[in-house]
Image 1: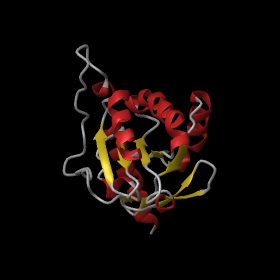
Image 2: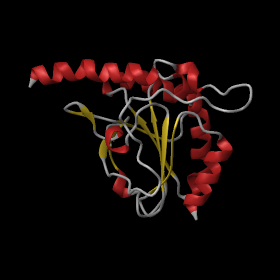
Image 3: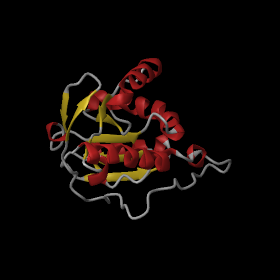
Length: 191
């Protein structure tokens, strides 16, 4: 058991290194287009129209979060990110803006952190400094797999999944997304 756990830590660190090794790649170019984020080969993001996999994890306050408590009622924006991912940290203010803009209309914004609870203090400080207004939850390892990221097919960060009122993925993207594009998708999900 201890051997499996000690092997899982290097595997997770390797995955995180691949996911965040090239932070400049997600930057907007002078022409206004975004370059493709490097992703882990063989992992496919769940496409539009797929039922969102349920999950249960803990947040920064160690409170339980269940996706099913929101799905089927309100749209949910899942933002997969890492503290070590430059593009994730740059996209955070825009995600925070969406949380503020749509909080009274029923949108739940959930930041799914992939760094693990060992990074809790650094993440709490970052959330406080950036005045993040949405809930941050920690993805967890179950053996060699992430509880949330793997079923969603997260192969790079940042990654966004918009789950509509019926619990179905209506939009997903790896890498940067414009505020206008995300607003359009959120507006559709809120109808």
